[in-house]
Amino acid sequence: MTTNWPEIDKDREQISQLNIQSKNGQSITTAKQEIALWQGKVNQHVENGLWVTDPDGVSGAEINKLAYCRKWYPDTTEVIMDDIEYIEGFRGRGNTGNNAAEIQTYKCYSGTAINNTNTDLTNSQLPTNVNLSPEQKIIVSPKPSNVTVALYVLADHKKTLSNFTTDWAGWVEKEIIEEWAQNDQGSPWIEPSSDKYFLTKLSRTMSYSEMSEDLFLQNAEDNNPVNSWKEEESSNKEIFFIILMIISGALTLGIAIILIWQYGFKK
Amino acid sequence: MTEDILQSTAKPRPETPGNTSKKKKVSIMGVLFTIILAIVLILLGERIVFDLNRVSNPIVEKSVTSQSDYSIFRSASSLGLSSESSGLSDTSIYYPTTKKGEYLIYKLSIHSAFIIPIFLLTFLFHYLFVVKKKYPQLYVVMYAYLTFAFWMLLHLLGELAIFISNQFPNSAIYIILGVLVVIFTGLAVFVQKRIHHGAEV
Image 1: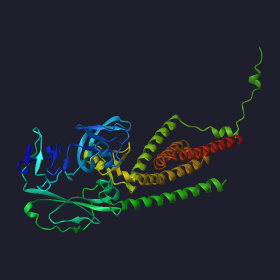
Image 2 (image 1 turned 45 degrees about the vertical axis):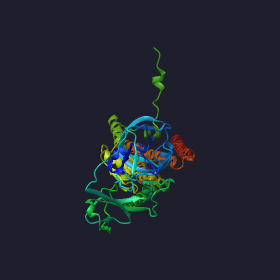
Image 3 (image 1 turned 90 degrees about the vertical axis):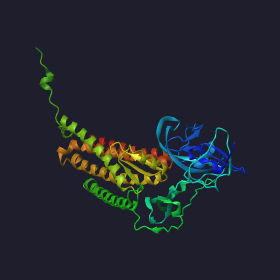
């Protein structure tokens, strides 16, 4: 069955279960190919639509995600962070025990990847003809009048944008940024030069007609975190740590002197 | 009737200064309260070292009091954070997994900053109250404090062993066993010295 683009309805979930072949032969592998990593537990991957543990019983969350995707899906070229799923059957070292939790999953893409599951596919990105078997169909929903735009800004300062809401703001370490995504060489997609950056997530629901003007980011008045993990600047803790060390050192020295004086000299 | 020569000739054994000094009146209730005190001190000490690490470890990014909040857990997992909790607190602390080594160094330093002065202070009090007998009524209580001090020291040694095995997995066994050899040699020599000293008296 050959279906022309204008007749197609879009449904992201259905698309994700299909293997689409475009006119020019470029393939988009969208069958469910995912991995899930949980610190301290054996990794999981999808096999025949089900989450299964790694039979080696040792592969953990520290492993390179692209290399791990290729272990199960050799054609993988890109790893993209997906949604959070409730997964049962996470096992400990040696595939012992049984644990369940809501875990971040990663999609393993091969061929031309759809970079974001929320991407609004435009005509230029989709093939004009899609070859489908009789039991397969793609549903395309009508174009929405309003869309939510989310901007993630990595900078050395918190940013603001008029009419946008700050959903999240906080310092992010270099190591975490490097872990976010990897290219097909297995290297970090973003290679930061500084030790940490300020990440600001700005969002706004707007109509297509409002998207005609440029956006100009400005520095925020402060660098206070918003919904961030970090409760306070680590410098405060560093000061407390130094004070603790000074007090402890002075106490240790004082007690040691008294002990020597009492035990040594008096003897 | 024969005379019991044992009763007529035997004299009671004269009390030596050594004998009298070793006999100390200790009540059962005193011992019981001392045991309870030791347990309470250990629990208090464990909680203090956990909280000190929570508030002064620069690597710690967040303290969470509720374990049942799944949204917090999943955020931590996706951000590459590891957690640590205490049986004496419903608070968990989160730190970046990539900085585990640095976190352990800070934790070890903070715990040492509390445990080492406490150990030395207890040793000083033991010397003053037990050895010098300045306050005989504190004799029993000092054993609770000594138990607490040694428990905390063992806690610190255990953490040191975990740190070494994490950071230097190949040479860990040599370092840990080496440290144990030094400690137990010192303790054995110290105990033997005290026995010799007691025998001479």
